[in-house]
Image (tube, rainbow, N blue to C red):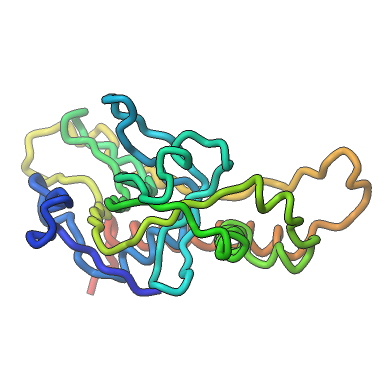
Length: 250
């Protein structure tokens, strides 16, 4: 998947400026960073306005392509409020995906921070056409649970009719990243007997818990593979931050 990360689009007055105003060095315009953030996304928090009031709701999500380029796919019920709001014309939304990679403990709460990767996508979220809904649902499943569709039965027509997907184009997106240690110096006049550093955080997998009627069935490959992938991502992220916090002397 290749996407774009744009701070603003002067040619489209309907799109707000996505330029970061504070700590501008943390904004990334590298499409690979947006790709990586969305590839790990499980939940997107989607903001929209209803009856004059702003609302933000969480949606299971996936990244896919229904033939017109990469889109963020938002999964829900045909009776869900945002899906009804969208109708045929779509609805303006802002979708955010955030990964918190660590808490940064400085020697003051003011200087403490967090390591994170976040992406904001704005645009018109439209209901996936009926003839593409099955494919959209498959792509969401493949994003969240890779390989699982090969292990279970296919969706029924009734299940497809009861489920809906919104598609949000990725043309207008902003990425912001912090991946650093504590801002400190030997002559900063702070008490260096107080520990300062980074506490890595990550999504990792626990032991799979079988359902009531699973009996002694072995854990399927898709479950084990996803658990291993999450653990691998957590170790890789921790190693990346460690290299920044305590770089190896040349």
